[in-house]
Amino acid sequence: MRGYAPTSVAANGAYQTAALSTDANALHDVLGADSRAVIIGHDWGAPAAYGAAILEPSRWKSVVGMSVPPWGAMGNAFVNNLNQVQRSWYMFFFQHGLADFVVGANNHAFIDMLWDQWSPGFTAEADIAHAKACIAQPEHLAAALGYYRATLGSGFRDPALESAQALTQSESPPQPLLYLHGENDGCIGLDVAHDATTRAPEHAQVKIIANAGHFMQLEQPEIVNAHIVNWITTHAS
Image 1 (cartoon, rainbow, N blue to C red):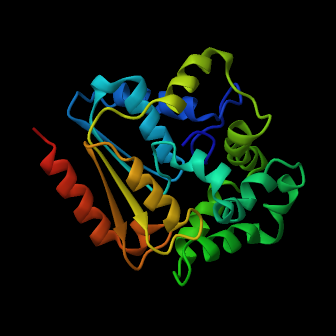
Image 2 (spheres, one colour):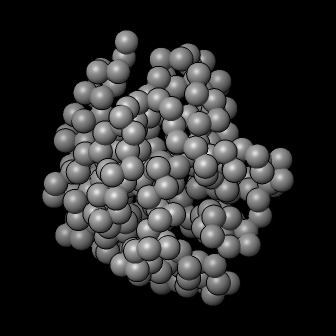
């Protein structure tokens, strides 16, 4: 993902979801992929995947999203689900300049706190160390915060992506889509996943991963991988 080390920061400072989606489609080109490609995204990678599939549907055979649901479920939660607004407090805190200092303080203790809340009971020292290394330098931390500021605040949005941004926020991926959500996710609640289920089109499925939180692919890798492999195999033809 752009801005997270060792990936370079965006030259123009754009971290809106449409920029992430165009990155994914550009990667499709670089890898020499074809229309059989499957795009899989977790957390910020999920809206990046949804947007890539919407903007250039001929590139992608199917889509897998994890931990951030599609179909307008998040937008609805921010308006109508105060429990989710409370869970998402950090997104609003990140709009303030104080976050530039707090998140990086005390060996990024803020990150430890979020992981504890998002995947309760999961021991993840090595994974957290990798996450902290991605934002160890100020320019990379600024990039990480830029994702949230471009989404909810006054962060920079590339005018050239205005129409793409509008399209990704108003449409849903036309491809078969599998959405996975951790039963114990403390970042985005199970209630939001259940709402997503009611919004899912016929070509989509929602699966709840038991005994897993926000980082389900680390907590229950065999189960998550089995769901993904089965999905890809089922929709290969």
